[in-house]
Length: 336
Image (cartoon, rainbow, N blue to C red; front, side):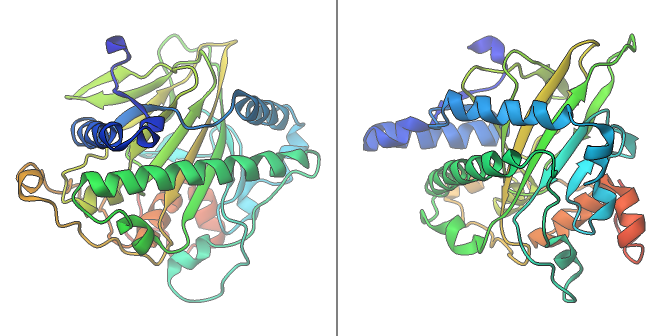
């Protein structure tokens, strides 16, 4: 497994007795302190459910342009729905991918903090009613995986097992179903540009056999090829913040496939309620001594309140939605 460039952890070890669970927590802490990324097996996600999600993704992107654009995200002030190829940006540069964004199904909220604008209903394609059902099953299972991971993380950092659950509130989740179309360009193209996730935890499902994900390690970009039956897991800026930089939110990017190939991936983001602020974890002395401090990037400030981080990310990634629905927020600490 050494050629995979990332550690491989088996979540099922948490259920194999105290010794195996303690070793898993040690490996989890080391992977996210040193790398910020790892492969996760033993999640209990069945091949059948993964295949259903994959087929639903293929079916969605096979819809006519008219059907997909009927739920285009420019129609949603909550940044939900379909983004056409080239409709998203990272570091100000166009990402070569199309996607549908799906968050918690809630009623819109009027007033309050600006990040309340992220709360609202999803946009679902009328031509594909089954998409909603498989996404609901995916969300339920991966939420359970995320909670199990976070309990293990808390213990590995010397905190109470319930640290995250007691401070999360109602989680803010986001599922992106993404298609990276192939390009004919001779040089590698930006599927999605280099970035660090804005929240706590990401579980990424990648179409079997399809590469393209790269992770920054020691200043170099290394490939993270898919592993059958495994998710790619990474932490976001809030977990780096909560640990004073002991845990590492790592830059990553996706290189577009070469035509006629394409690539489907489905990241699942598990984050606190928008109005939740994670208190700093009081690390044991031996861990605190290895904390590197939170990354200081004036162009990308890390906010302790998750809603501020999330809104920052959405406004920067989708300037068209921001201009249509949130012109009063454009330009206020939000360039990306």
